[in-house]
Length: 198
Image 1 (cartoon, rainbow, N blue to C red):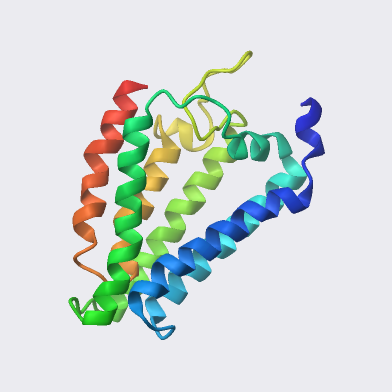
Image 2 (image 1 turned 90 degrees about the vertical axis):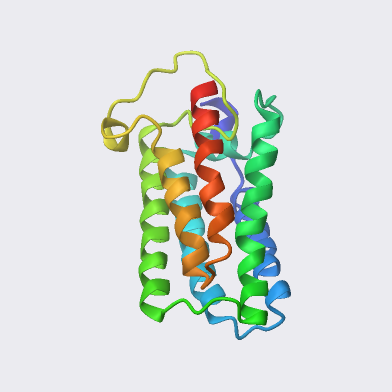
């Protein structure tokens, strides 16, 4: 893999640290309180999985991490990515306001079940990463790249999108918000459109 094997651990871990700090700000600033317990549970799950995946691939496949962190490639669908990013922001921000102003009353068991599904979705993405070392944040085809038909790819053609969609659909309930579900549902047609354009 050439230089891909020389990925410094400090660089690899800097990305998840930044992601977790930003996620915490998006959750707790709108909530106006650190007592937003649903936010802590969700953040703990996402943080644990993100750091586990980073540690796993530092040892097993640093080239994949390099590819995931490489933002130099040209994204062929910038408009779609912007829409998905905007919807994601709303999915994370709205629950905080929901908590602050008591818009929703999601039962505790629903919050727990939704968090379990968020975890399952992230594990599904991890399994896709394990099978597909060409995984990249942008749509591209590399030399010697082959169609993957093992692991989660044996069940679905786009397991990363499947896992992401499951996470996004369940995150509003995991964060105790019915209102954020509106933006999560809008994720479905946008993801389908992106897949078809691929």
